[in-house]
Amino acid sequence: MQPITFPKAGKLLLNRYVNGVPVKSASTSFFRAGAVQSIVPSIELKTSTLPDGNSDWDAAELDTGKGGTIIINLSFMSPELYAFLLGTDVEDLTSTVMPVVDWEITVPETSPY
Image 1 (cartoon, rainbow, N blue to C red):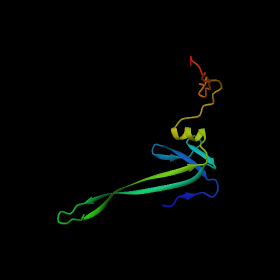
Image 2 (cartoon, rainbow, N blue to C red):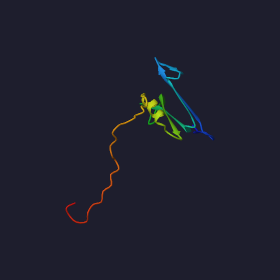
Image 3 (cartoon, one colour):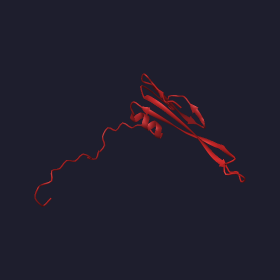
């Protein structure tokens, strides 16, 4: 299949399933403009061979199923979209302790290091 490319910014609408049915409401839907950049579907057929006992060649190659993937490239990944995909909510924190992950230190040339 050919990839679906958007010449302009696409729109992304995701709906949650409630009791096996997609529900479109403010609490179960996520909508953002300008999020989708491209969609690339990929379908693969699963097959198995049926051997022929009287010949060197197989009697048939049977289709046993289908599998597929869809790759969606987004122009941005907002925290709200990430939370929606994980089934959680974004919390606005007013004050919290954040760890320091960017620590710079100069190692002396002589010991003790």
